[in-house]
Length: 378
Image 1 (cartoon, one colour):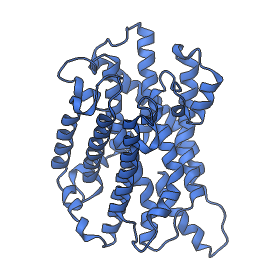
Image 2 (cartoon, rainbow, N blue to C red; image 1 turned 45 degrees about the vertical axis):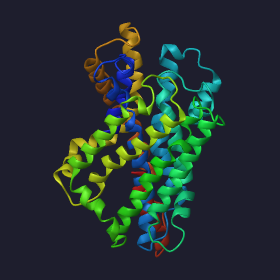
Image 3 (tube, rainbow, N blue to C red; image 1 turned 180 degrees about the vertical axis):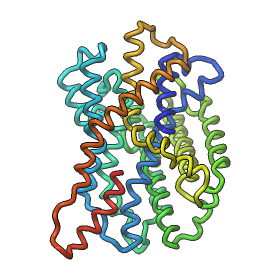
Image 4 (cartoon, rainbow, N blue to C red; image 1 turned 180 degrees about the horizontal axis):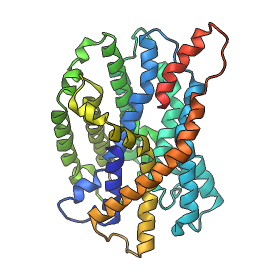
């Protein structure tokens, strides 16, 4: 859902629909909400093994093996995309050694003009990478004290405070709206929302925090949750969340957009994570849906390259083209490259992350600590 939404957002901009006055312009412009889904989901899935280990009395996942598996999952496919985009895309012919170094190290967002063509979307991956690195420390801090799976309200409050402080600094001019809106503190509330949901999910699974049982009730009503999310997205399509073009929003507009997107992403996730088994969950657990999940990272990585080359090869002018046709070609081409990337690059390397060292008999502590970390890497 997140990847397909992001593709639609980029196609809408490339065809000029986003910046027009048509009935779908606002909706396409705000489908970058898919990034919020990514970030909330990362907070939920990656923090959950730490919360689960604490709640069940097991050793916390080892930071080393967690970071190794994250690197194997993210970097090889990403580096391949960078190499292809910088070598093949004509508009990247003037790429410098600095461009190569910044993109390979995921530091492109810290340079004022660091994002190259067909790689502009990688700002979100650079932001996520910082979260990945900090997560072991954040998890230990969140799990300090007596609460077995952490304090969800405190986690969310601290994350919201970080984002609010960052937006306040943007509003006073201390930070730049053109540069610092891609840095991690802007989106701390998204990651924090995911971590808070993971804390609640683990607690409910172990008979704690009964006052949060209402999330299980919400999980039984996916249409209500997603209908509310759609209504919030409708609010975001207005100017209240900033311009639909690449023009800078005000700090207030940016902050409101971040808040609306956080609520939307949570409402998307809750019916899939909480409550009993439903037909909705069964649909998302089907073979085809699971395959889409496997290659969705590749679709995210490759679709701007497909879109860029489509316009280059056909000689189309920017901000022209049929929306549905362009979307279908971009998704199809993106899925093809994503599949090749997954089966030829990602899957073989991921096996390295699950190799087990030969352990002496009875070394149960190391064995237990590896299990939750494996979940985080999946």
